[in-house]
Image 1 (cartoon, rainbow, N blue to C red):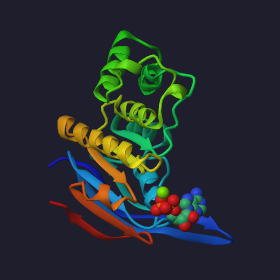
Image 2 (image 1 turned 90 degrees about the vertical axis):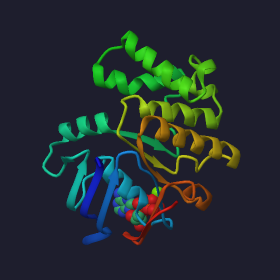
Image 3 (image 1 turned 90 degrees about the horizontal axis):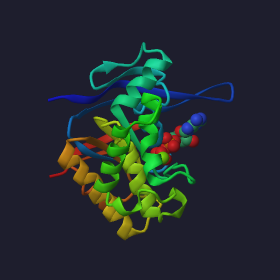
Image 4 (image 1 turned 135 degrees about the vertical axis):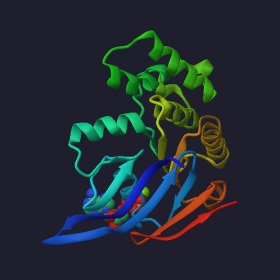
Length: 230
Ligand code: ADP
Ligand code: MG
């Protein structure tokens, strides 16, 4: 088995008053290639904090975090950025698209950042991804003219642009009506099954969590349950 994510004894504290408040109290977690896992737990339990650490957007206060076998503890900022770009895709509740840019331009952004200037392959890859998420008719629409569900599809295509081993999704359907949420969830599942991309999805919707292969539950900064969901 290939481990895409390994956490050992991860702790995270934030400064508070004249001391520190610990939010995550020693998280151990391993995710294998191809897993489709839900991360659930009450509001304030530390789900987003954990996702930001896994996504290398923030550093743990203690513990070791490995991405696709790369230990991250000692890496300088630029190496973390490279590792993030090559291995991790993000989907947030708020899509953070550039409104005036077309769907195609938004999906090309990570490729542009990586390679410095546009090329034909980049364009083809972005068009292929938008087709995969059902937006082949909307390539040149500005993001601002798309519906909420379509915008989230663009965000998913963008997250996949660099062929990440692991996609982190923080309440990706939190902003959408039930029907649209279902179809976005089905899309994530399809990508997982077709490409073997691993997913770790934060959701507060038990119905969606039950559609994942594994359900990890965080309460007060600790994993209190981690079960296969046959
Ligand atoms: P969840 O996503 O499960 O709702 P969060 O990870 O957002 O929970 O937050 C967990 C706890 O950490 C909350 O009590 C929150 O107030 C606190 N917290 C999150 N980010 C910060 C920060 N940057 N500084 C201080 N406290 C924070
Ligand atoms: Mg959160």
